[in-house]
Length: 205
Image 1 (cartoon, rainbow, N blue to C red):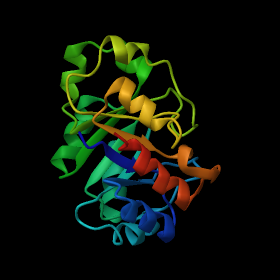
Image 2 (cartoon, helix red, strand yellow):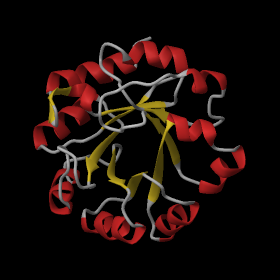
Image 3 (tube, rainbow, N blue to C red):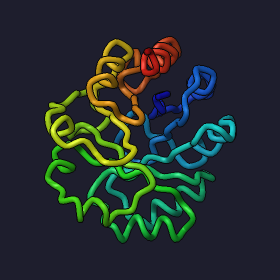
Image 4 (cartoon, helix red, strand yellow):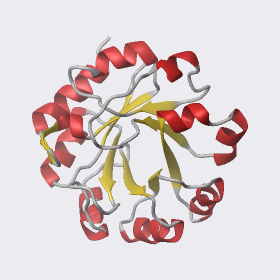
């Protein structure tokens, strides 16, 4: 199975172009405050126009009101949003009503504690399971995912690097992977060579 790959936290034209040329399936633009990777809606829009139709451009939000998410996504001309935080099923429904696709990002501990009924209530388009602190480059104990893997397509994030991603994919069999700090030369600064290596390693047989 070909692993779906997202390169997140992009903020420059050269790294967007590198991700697309390397074969990434999605790119992410951080539209949440407080990150070294944060861009404004105008910058995200300018970067997204470089992304071909077969690659998904995703706006990444964390702990923001859903009306702000919708407004910012529209300003950036993005049709997919990734929600990190304490969003409720009603927030996902509101995003859907606004014509947006939703990636629900949840840390592994929260996911392990959710009932199946609670998980189904969100009705997100794609589930992403992350470390407790997203974007920090930290991995996590995968035992809960080994014991109870999601019964649907899901994306693994948290502590992935070009050197580690192939082993993690082999161990956990996610549908896709998402990386940000693992392809940086310094915090918030993406490295074109690492982006290329990551995409290749994520799909290594």
